[in-house]
Every structure is written in C-alpha cells, then in structure tokens.
Image (cartoon, rainbow, N blue to C red):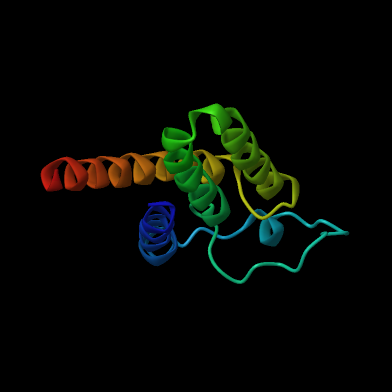
Length: 119
C-alpha cells in the first residue's frame, strides 16, 4: 500500500503537476551564496519529497497507529528540509502535504474496498 501511495503521488506530482505549473525553484530566483545541495533541475511545484513522504506516512499511520506521530514528524522534517535548502516555496510544500495526504486517503480507501469486497 505504501508503494501504491508513493506511485500515485509520483504520477500526480512529478508526472503531471510539475509539468503543468512550470514553477521555477527559489534557488533560481534568490541569489544564495552557499547552497548546501546541487540545484535541482526539475520544476518546483509541488514538492515531490513532501508529497511522497506524507503519502507514505498517511498509509503507514493507518496501519501502525502507535507510530503515527513518528511517521508524520519525519514527513514534517522532510517538508521543512525542502524550505531550508531553498529548493521549494512554502506553497510548494503545503500543496505537497495536501496531495500526499490525498493520495494516502485514496490508496487506503481503494485497498479497504478491495479487501472488504474480497471477504
């Protein structure tokens, strides 16, 4: 299920939205002297790292409720890192969170229907 959520989030975010919106990254708009990582070559909107981390966190937290806070804390740190590294705008990260949670909801719902239909 986590792989399905990751796949769906990649298709929607990286495959479709980035190529429709064509938003440049903040590192290309802001002259930052010491960028900690190489400048990414793809578009900025939405944040793929944020989308995928929240998609997987949403699926895992449904099945491992005891660790849900940890899953979302890790996903939040990943989202923050995208801002800290000047590779995304806050709206890129916000939409990544929403899209990731939406993908996890869809996958959880689809798999739940398949399991109940199969039983």
